Amino acid sequence: MSDLFDATTIITIVIAVFILLRLRSVLGQRTGHQPPPVPRQPERDNTQPEPENGNVVSLPSRGVAGEGANPAHAAINSYAEPGTKLNSGLMDIASKDPSFEPESFLSGAKMAYEMIVTAFADGDRKALKNLLSKEVYEGFAEALDEREKRGETVRSTFVGIEKSDIRGAAVAGNEAQVTVQFISQIISSTHDSNGEVIDGDPDQVAEVNDVWTFARSLKSRDPNWKLIATESDE
Image (cartoon, rainbow, N blue to C red; front, side):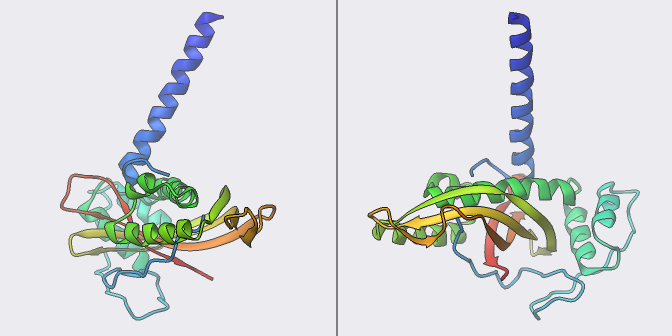
């Protein structure tokens, strides 16, 4: 009985360590309600084949070239159709960061999304600071300050992510940027100082549609990605 317990404990620890290391390698150090929208930075590139806005910097299309030199290219071509701006943007990132792979990045992004949404609902500034850029953190912190001044609290349950897709990718200067759309289900309600519900529904699952942009420096050995922009996709 004791041997069985020890084996089970060891397996559980190994799995936990693997998950934490995977998250760090993809999106950075671990941290974890609906955050305030943060304007997109001008240099971010929307890499959809037919973008909805004009703030697009065209990237050279790499097509399927170089697959033999970089195994990540095959994964990118599988994720995004060759010849599209999304494929070109992902290829540009992979050319400067051979370890980049769309599905792996997306897996880490989903974990980061849940942690950030949960931390904002809980008012956990320390957790937020590890996954947000300085500008985004300041916006989140200001929203938390205002909420606390009003004596409001948020009760939130993250149900899950229904869908997530990479919508854009680009290299802007020395920075890799990836934009992801998340469609999630959250139970959330805001309460005043008397505990009365003033927003949301504590018994209703709501669908939330967010578009977030993550970035990391390509000149740094630090593999961490941070959230640099958020918006709601109504």
